[in-house]
Image (tube, rainbow, N blue to C red; front, top):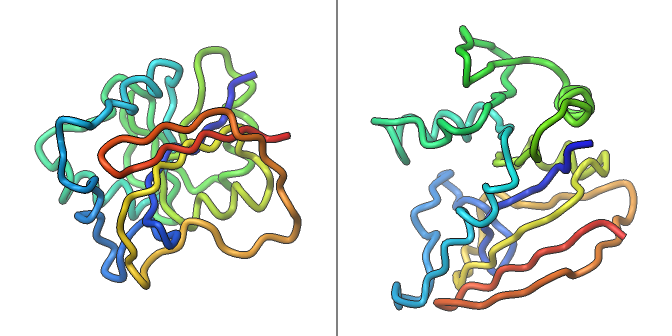
Length: 176
């Protein structure tokens, strides 16, 4: 069965985007020589990425408008208004929990929940995340889009690894 992982960065006060939806604050404390390429490490075990419409739209309009950055992965975009799909990018209005249950049964590598908050919160509420890779950025935003909202139950985790570089801290947890 495929493992479902959340790989995301958040501010010290728990936001994944500022109040305007921007992520331009996602940086360390200024010493780029200390940066570690955690993405390349993580994505070695991933062949599928799932994201919401807002995350997809931000990638193709702001973050990487000239090329699709996840070309080596099969992408599922959960949206209420599906568009025409391609071989690599599938737009769907399927319930994300049901979609992930189906994808989890397929062969291959793991599944990455890329964003956004609404999608993440639905999957956390249903306890669908096997592994949490969270990078804490040395910034306090004060407001914005929260990574975690209220859940109906407690989800216990086990800390697997921490790593600090350039003022950022990676926290890697699995379910207990």
